[in-house]
Image (tube, rainbow, N blue to C red; front, side, top):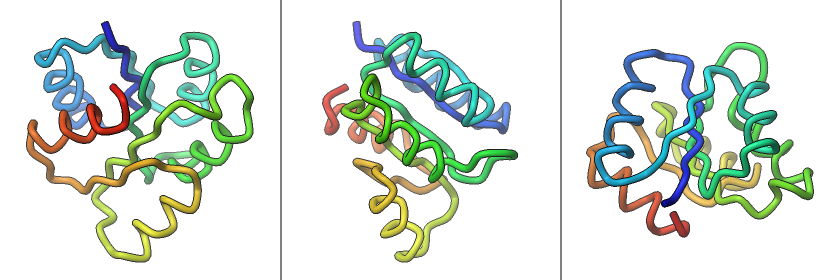
Length: 120
C-alpha cells in the first residue's frame, strides 16, 4: 500500500485531502507544519508528499528545497497543493523541486490523478 504525507495547516483541508486519499486506498500521514513534515518524511519515508505552500514558519517552497537537499528524501515525489494559482507561483514551485502543482479548489479525481502520475 502506498503512503502519502499530507502537509496542511488548515484542519478542514487536511481532512478533505486525507479523506480522498484514504478512500482511494492510500495510507495517510498528516503534518501540520513544514518542519514536522520534514522530520516525518525522513523518519517514515512516504511514497509521495502533498504540501500546501502558505504555512506558519517554513513555507511549502522551503520544504521542497530542504527535502531535495536531503539524501533520504531527494527522490520522493512532491505535489504542491495550494490556492496560489498564478503562473509565477507554479513556475516558482517547480523550481523549488516540486514534481507537480495543483491548485485549490481541486476535485477528488484531480488529486488522485496527480498522486498516481508521480508514482503513488
